[in-house]
Each structure stands twice: as structure tokens, then as C-alpha cells.
Image (cartoon, rainbow, N blue to C red; front, side, top):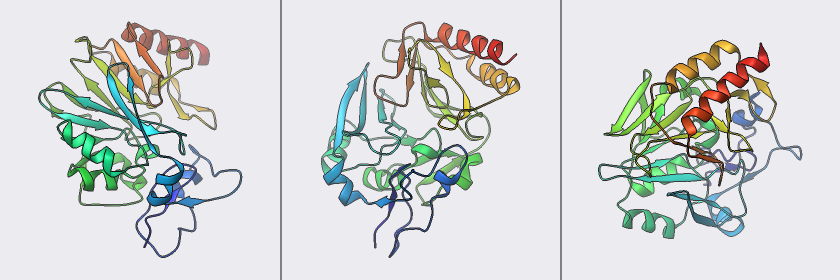
Length: 266
């Protein structure tokens, strides 16, 4: 049986004889069903159409595919003396990628910002023998349950010294960001997926309930996100896609982004 993967959002479903009839992730107002209609693929087909691509992205190794698949995000491999974390997930996976990550020390945990990037996380967890850390508020959005998933609750979860997950609602109730206290330059970094989406000018971020369908969050949500981020020290923000990062003075950029957002909706 195949573990079918949604072509539009990249979500992998439990193995079955036939593709699922629908994709609840795409049918949610925060995503959309592809204009051509629902379509499915699988890992073996992805290996032919979207091979794994590694690329250094401002001090971190990114792992994705070329051409881009589904939403097009890339995973990031954070390596520290105490723990290695695979942040977010990309659908394609092959033996060479597994062996390369193992040669770099493997991963202590896989942490994912929200369900649009859960994709083939079970395959990664099984191959890398690593737990998947997800916030329990996103439990209903996991389409393929697995023993490797560890649900965490509350507002923060320490993976190791200097690597902490924070619940950051807005896009999803269980939306998660990763604070890397040291950062690649010793000044700290936020790995934000699109929970805080780095904008095209790479000088600001935004928070929206739905990005493709352009549904904003309200002022109270922005202020709550601001309160979560304010105590954290960071000089960089790593977004969800290749090169969509704020490199240098990122904390001021994020603060200015919140001010700009609140002024715009006032």
C-alpha cells in the first residue's frame, strides 16, 4: 500500500489501497484545493519528479527539493554541541539524505511549526530514529498518527540548552517557533516557518490567519505574539523558504513589523 501525499499541500496520509477522497488540510480556509482538483503522489514518484536538494542558507543547511514541491518550504538542520534539530519538514526523502544527516550527528528531535509542513514527517522520524515534537493544540491537524509523535503542552518546550520551542498562535493555535539562543553568529536566531512570515523585502514579518486567502489576525493576536517574542534575544529570523530570512537587526525589524501591522488595522 502507498502512503499517498497531497500534491497541493504535501501532507502524507496513512498507507491505503487508494488515495484519500479529500485533503482536510487543503479544504481548511487557511489553505486551498488546487484549481485543477485534488491530486496525489507518493515518495517513490517524488524521487523522480522532485529530487532532494541541499543548500547552505545563511549558516544553516536547508533541505528541500528542486523544483519546489507543494508549498515549497525547506527544512533547516540546526546543529549545536548539545543537540541537533531538524526544523520543519520537506516531503522528498532519500537514502543519501538520511546517511548525510547521520554522518553529521543525526538529529535529537524533529520540530515543526504547523501542519502545512508536517508532510512526510513520519518517514523522517522512522529513518532518523527521532521523535517529532508537536504542540497538542494542533493535534486535530495530524493526518498520519505515529508513535514517534510527542505532544507538548503549555507555552514553551526546551529541547536542549539554548534550543526552545514557543507556542505562537495566530496562524494556528499550536503554531510554533524555535528560539536558538546562540544562533550561527552568537547573537541568537528565531526559526519561524511562516508563523512569523518573512516578507518579500526581507526587512519585516507578518502574521496572518490565512496567507493564500489573505485573512489577517486581529490586534489582540498581534499583541500576544509580540509579548511572546519580546523577551527573546535574536539577530536573525529564518523564514520558511530559501533565502526568506532577516539577517541582522532582526529583533528591531520584528518590533517595527508589529507596530506597522497595528497601525494599518487601527
